[in-house]
Length: 163
Ligand SMILES: [Zn+2]
Ligand SMILES: [Zn+2]
Image (cartoon, rainbow, N blue to C red; front, side, top):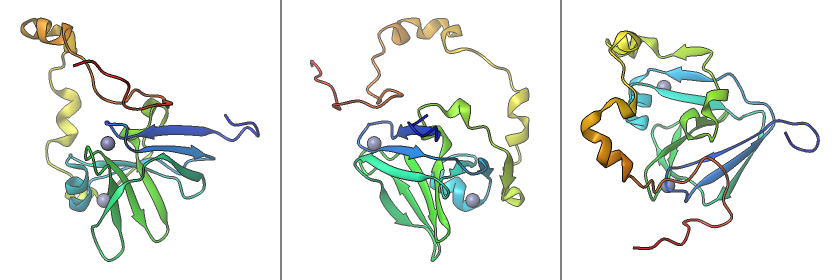
């Protein structure tokens, strides 16, 4: 919350070159199954939330944009490629997964369902495993060092890093 009690949100790309801050109420979070969103997100669907009614500031860097149609642009980090925005004449929507706290932003509606991939609805029924369940990967995981930006704002990025 900010001083005047407006909700605030932060987030950014995986490499940390682009960071955003939102102050104010988010629109209805959604997923869009349309083929354009599949390609733009490199995924089964795009999960987006409109920030049309809020204040959006790019606090570090700014997305590079691809004009995906005569009406829309897709913003992404030019350094690491993380999908970040869908921008249309009526406003900007941000990728829910790019928020620092995406668990707060539950989708409320689906769009583009005519293009929904046939196996998407079956995913919750697939066998599930936690990361550490994979015994063969124990050493790999124990020695893993993430170079992704953490889920909070940083004064300096990237940090000093030994070789
Ligand atoms: Zn990046
Ligand atoms: Zn779409």
